[in-house]
Length: 170
Image (cartoon, rainbow, N blue to C red; front, top):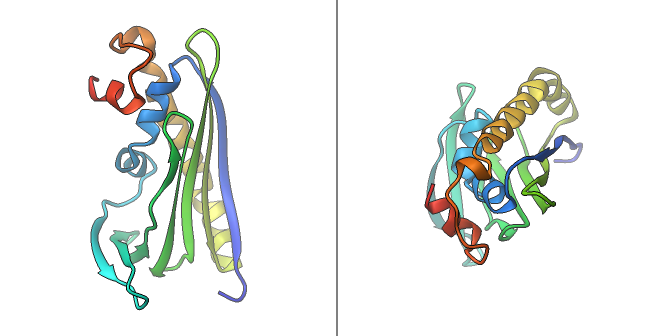
């Protein structure tokens, strides 16, 4: 897109929850999408013109079909996860998220969340005004839920267990 603008919504918070739990729940991208109000997607694979396999997602959002190429997410288990969608149909050019998790003392965790989207300047300005507050509130509600599952409410497991293995016991 010749004239493109990107906007982002950020939220930082310190939670009274262990980093393994926080990361595991944030890394559940289906749960994350639902919490932010995104429509349920369906996925399939296709072969790109250069022979690579691409993961294609489709959904109906706000009464409109959207389709995107979704490259593999980037992550370091227990530390961060980042995903991006390159839209091939719909009003946006791309969108995505990043969650950084930092273990602190006393079972607390610092979380930095970022949701971003890019498209025409007019569309991005409109979406920021119309949906920015709602998305930020949804991010906060999601983190409130994660915090409610803090160490006292989560199963006791070995510190050497991988984050996703711990979360599987919830």
